[in-house]
Image (cartoon, rainbow over all chains, first blue to last red; front, side, top):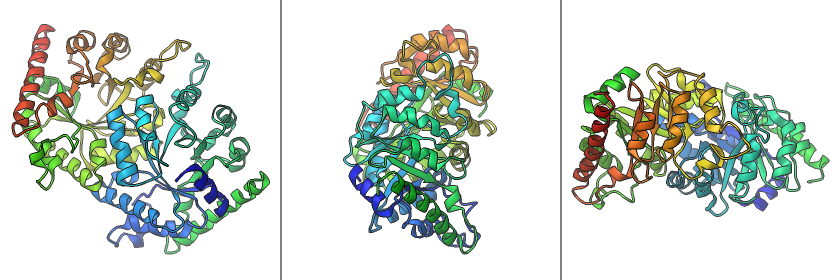
Length: 276
Length: 276
């Protein structure tokens, strides 16, 4: 999916919500466990329940890998299911990959060719040749970690007082030259909304993937104020607050309600900032 | 496997060689392709051919993921095969994982519980809480990227002249406090052998995983000179130079010859530095 199509979907659904499919088999409703593939069945119902309100889905590979081959199968089925939806959403493999060139090429093939997702999250620590192999696929995206939403982010990304330029700024400055706004996005934790201004000065036109809304405590209004651009430029993710909104027979309905609530807030903000 | 057992194996085999199972289905001998699981069959033959000379094996997850569920199955079978060998080698999943706490926990379960490897490579970019979940499993190891062997390493790891302390040093200084020499190792590219001295000043007792010998051009003698410690403290990896030493019917024999050559050099060095 290219940038314009993504923006069109955002306007159509009046939403820039991404639903994170961090599907933990120990947290899904018990009545699903008797089915052949409970993880896929859960995802399918969550997707059906939220598709009206979400422009993107982000399965987190860790939650599938921990179930071995069976988990990998559930992941593939989930992505196939997302890909056959009529108004196909933007699909992100949250995999945080990144390795030397020939290995990154293999990861790119795994996710862009084998699975056919739109985007994959990438760790920048190993530098240019670890990221570039992800940038050579038409209408596919590398979403690079800039500033993450977790506590440990302060260890290196913006830690040391003796460093004049913070690491996340160096990564954005150097990294943006590896590709362009049509094949790169950046992960920016919502819990650091005040730093979004700095980031928007460096990458005014790129899309940003914002995790950390919901259970991680980010504030949507602040994110939009500091991060929105002319083509929206934001994909905001919520995982646990939506997919685990309920854990009984009506879990899907509960997740609809949660997704709708976030979408309504987004719609209001999109109007307020004249994007609708 | 704990540190003492690893050192014992090194002394027994007179080797600190790790064979990297970067098994690319397009590069393995053609006659294997008619078998049900050519990737596993290749690995099995390479393992049998090199087990006398290698103390560790390091499957690179990218090369399996790019084949989808079938690839993941080959990876699991390879690890099962390694685990049932009588003198069980040290098994490293070269996966470069790392994410927020609850996700890293899932990756740790995937590799330490589901697959039962000894160690997994981890990217440090997201800081302490992205690494710590890997440090809570008895006799299991996180091998953290410090200084990698690729060109892009210079982008952030030791790049900017305005930064007094290089990033890889900060990562070693902070990171070593997250765990200890019994649950953490460090990835240090052999192509930067001169920087090993700096690293040994910071982490004198930790084991280091050294990729980049062989096709990547690292020099074993230099690595040993600057990196060896009292318990060896080095696992040196070679991938392509060993596993693709041949590509005909005698490929396994060719890989034996290559592994033996490296082991002989290692044996000599271990004697020279009085570890044997």
